[in-house]
Length: 143
Image (cartoon, rainbow, N blue to C red; front, side, top):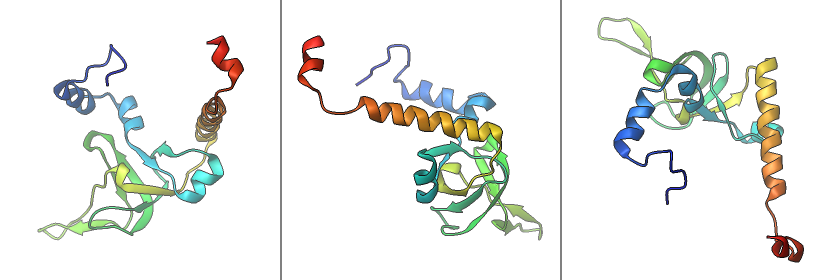
């Protein structure tokens, strides 16, 4: 069921908006889930991936491999991870592009901005969980 009348449910328009999105929106779309330990520690499920994060690949040919993110290639919707390379026909080695959703962040590169993002996301999650719960007779009578 469509809830927001200002957002189209057309597949054609959704695809167009996804693939022509500006860089600052692509950053958010290129998010990766956090490992169970980090999720427990920060109370956050996903974070936009960035250079110098340490990730583990969870899908595809390179499943199980881990390494540091060397580049986030927003134009191609991929990240490059150290030691995940292949050899071209001419002998040159190139990084294999991995989609961020197919990785798991195991170590975050922390700075003050990222710390602020984590705090903000954790607070909104706590607030949402506090709002959830059983209805009491008083709340039913007031509504």
